[in-house]
Image (cartoon, rainbow, N blue to C red; front, side, top):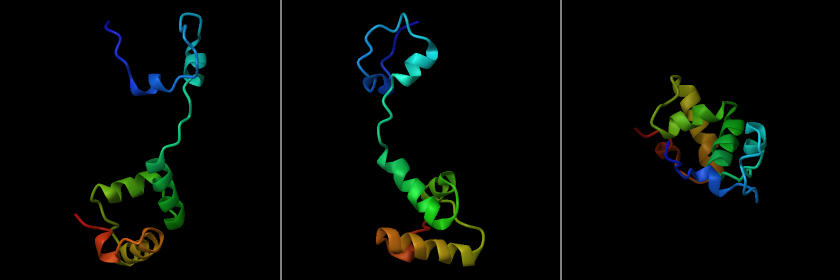
Length: 91
């Protein structure tokens, strides 16, 4: 098997030799780098009372089924981001 450099390998904490590590040790050697996009999803989700994957689905073009919820979420997101309400749920 050819060893391929994965992005998470870049963030490993000064651990050079993987031969003596357990899988758990290897996992824990990966730095928990901040993810601004994930933080954004979580912030919007918390403000709207939904989960981050729901917000990600909205970004991908899905819209809330209820027009009342759609308007409510658009208002909340607009207040947080400055994006116009009519530009929030665009397919």
